[in-house]
Image (cartoon, rainbow, N blue to C red; front, side):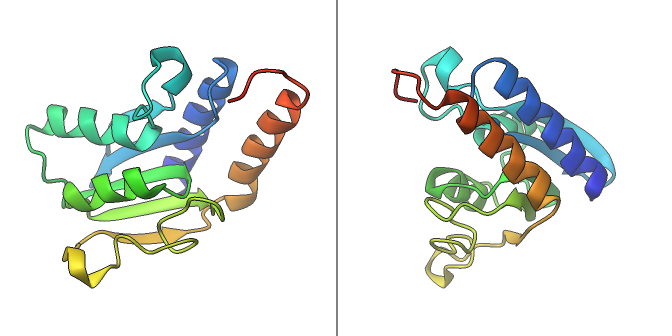
Length: 152
């Protein structure tokens, strides 16, 4: 598990170098990497270009099936409502995240969207893998942005 999160962290670092909020994700099936992605909202001007969604889209395309029941998504930050919803809709088997998100996290922090019985979800999740390292990436990124005039 740790090796996959380390790959997600590398993706997050790539995002930071591009001026994106440093969130990275990797999609794994069994013991094989399917794909990796990082946030691209600024570059693409697309509010849905979160690392998780980019990974789910590319993974479904590569695997030839929108059902990702036998896949695991490793992501450096707890998924937001949009990404948690996409995980449920793709029937993702497992999400493992690093840092919790007390503002928008929907895998336990603010809400447990995958665990909502009304959605009949199959997505399990667990948080906290390399949490301090993942949180530090975000803290360092935002600290470097303090004082900028533009709103991110």
